[in-house]
Each structure stands twice: as C-alpha cells, then as structure tokens.
Amino acid sequence: MRITVFGAAGNVGSRVVAEALSRGHEVTAVVRNPARFPQLPAGAEARVGDASNPEDVARLSAGQDVVIGATRPAPARANSSKPRKGCSPASPTPVCGSWSSAARAA
Image (cartoon, rainbow, N blue to C red; front, side, top):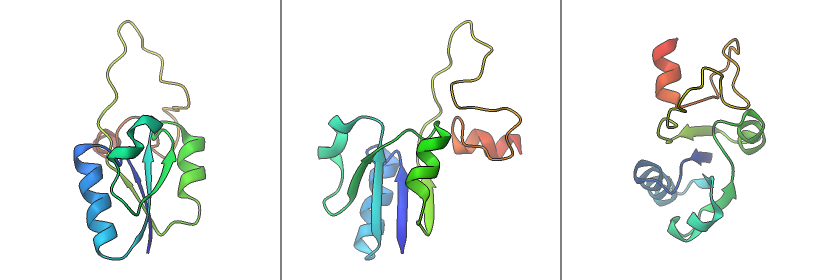
C-alpha cells in the first residue's frame, strides 16, 4: 500500500511511519522543514510539504492509497480573524488546520 504521512517527523507521525514501513508499505513522509529529514525512519521517501496548504496536500496525496494527517493544531495568530493562506471556511474539504479540529466542526 502507498501511504503519505503529514507530520512524519513528529512524535505520532514518526511512529506511524515506522509501523507502516515495518508492515511493508511504501511510505512518503512529509515534513515542513527539510532539516527534519534525518529524524525520519530509514526507508521512507522524504518530501517537503505543509498540511495546511491545499496544493501541497493534493500534490503529495496523488496516487496514494492512504493519506494520514499526524499534525498538531497550528498555533493561533494573535489579532487575526482571517483564515491562514490556503484555508477556505466554505470549502467542503477540510485541508486547513488540524484534521481533528476539522472533524469536530463537521
């Protein structure tokens, strides 16, 4: 199975990547900062992307069987009621912020 994991260098994401690799899956490990590539489990395909950017999500999800969001919620921006770049409150696809907060809103 082809799996993409966003937040792959984090506490949860790195465990998901390691488990998927141990089960023989092809894993694309996505991080925002390429400096975190050395923290990824061996065998994962390291890619740079941002789970809050719809274009990154679409590009890195293409051709995959499963896409996993293991990201933490983005920090709040002081004095801003505007959505972050790439976020659309009217979008039927929750690709902005954390997956868990999007699920609660549904």
